[in-house]
Image 1: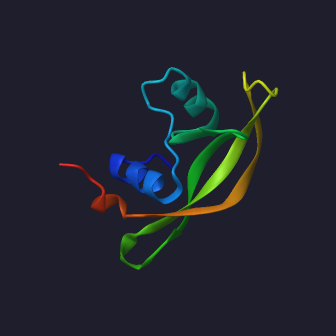
Image 2: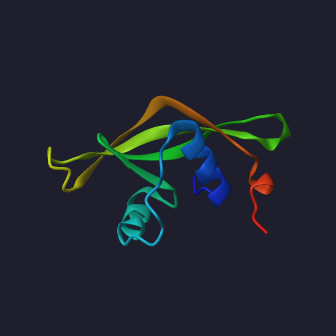
Length: 101
């Protein structure tokens, strides 16, 4: 799930996480492997948000999913893993509510 700037702010406000910015070269490599998403690096590896539910009125709930882990303790490279949904959920506005003028 590729987030808009407003949705990224919602994630940051709710769970304190910031994504890897799109201008980072690694984002194109990650997109080749995992698809077009907003990616989040954490101590335990790489995460992305997936749509969990669409609510009445078009609002969305996204789930943080762990998709890659560090290959070593030094966090030098990532190794894909079976996607593992976490217990972290984020409330997002409906996509049409997040368009920027």
